[in-house]
Image (cartoon, rainbow, N blue to C red; front, side, top):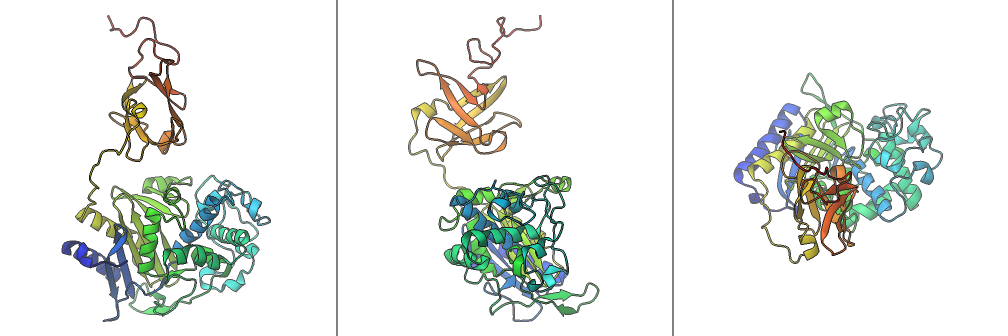
Length: 461
């Protein structure tokens, strides 16, 4: 996985090192380790430590907190892809009796199930999981705080329910299913529910003095699917590649793309901040780019995984302090540094290997009323449709194999596009979810709903 750091320019490597050095010093964390991934490989690794000569490498384990949720989401989507369940299923269908069963599986994945953010009772991250042996102990007497599906409200108990769902359907412990179905296929040998040497110790740094206090390390029990895992920059770099490209042994590219799409209603503050949540992944619009990934925290540890999909750059950051560095911004900065200093070089343009003449004749200009659109053939065999100028509804369309296409995004997502032909085989118009697109704006004789005024186009005189 690791490649020579010379693959990045010296100036880029220095900028990355400077950024983590500032974060470690100003954030006052005992250690900080980071990695950058580009083109499916780790191209930079850096570390800073308060102990001279003991900088952590890519094999040192840290707790990764809520990045665990992304792993749990992968397991749930595997069940969906196998046809065992549907994301629209109420939890009650597969895991009855929880008191939160009206929430769907998709709601829980996207933190839109209306559940409380935390478990009742003592601070679950700093107390033994044995204090919460049953789901009822995790959920409490009032698990629902909001109407199901109406708002994004981050919920750790929600991912406890998803872990219990996995155990019920698979008939095995969550950690065993995770190891068998995700960790082993992806080669994540240093990711586990419990630490093994070498691993970092977790510390709290006094807010007003340069002194430290050891944090407890607890087994989270039932809450494990929400935040139990330990991992390394090396393993999370591999996981970042998977979340970008997919891996048919675990989840295909189409499903990981689905994970990266917004799936929860956004709060007003989230809209202002450019933040959203997908299926087990956080999304953010920052520095003009869309970033996906997840952050995590547990007493003594902070973690972040950030992916700039369009830039083909990902960053991993791990620290061993309870608070200090602004870890989400740090991960985003590492992506930005590489993306701006060494922008992605696009693949060479190549002509299509073949083209269907009946599709090629659809290419070009079309009109929806008086607005001009262009239909283009895409390299994946589909088509795209969008306005010729300015903002407007646009989408890529997937070919269905029967002369129709299905919208993949925006207003036309899921809508059917088809070419309507006259009896002689020539194209009359395009039909897109009942919208009619013609070759000329409101031309007499065209199939325009409501018809065309018989006087035709005219001036004001």
